[in-house]
Length: 112
Image (cartoon, rainbow, N blue to C red; front, side, top):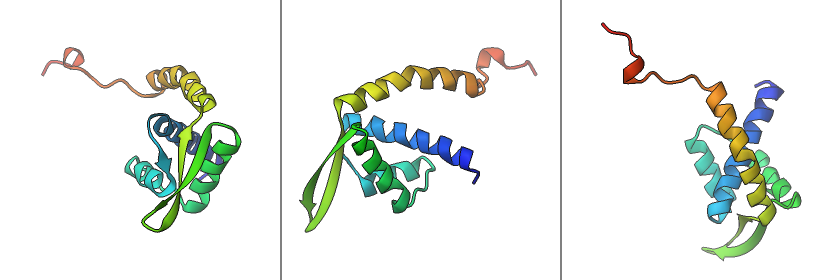
């Protein structure tokens, strides 16, 4: 995959992570499963550094918790993370309205 496409998709992943971290606590393997449902196949070597980077940037905060005898790191969005998501949402909506083709509606179908 060319680096440009990978960079764009990673930006989408960042938005997706923020979206979920605003509404709930997330953790790495759970987020990997969520992203996979949307067609993103990220290795742990990509996902975990991305989560750590978002935390270093102040967009996420983490806490460790023991779950079934293993330590799990949960992430939630900080106030800055919430503001960042809110800031990109209008631009994302505008981009989608321009970049995605319109789906035909019943009113625009051609008569047979």
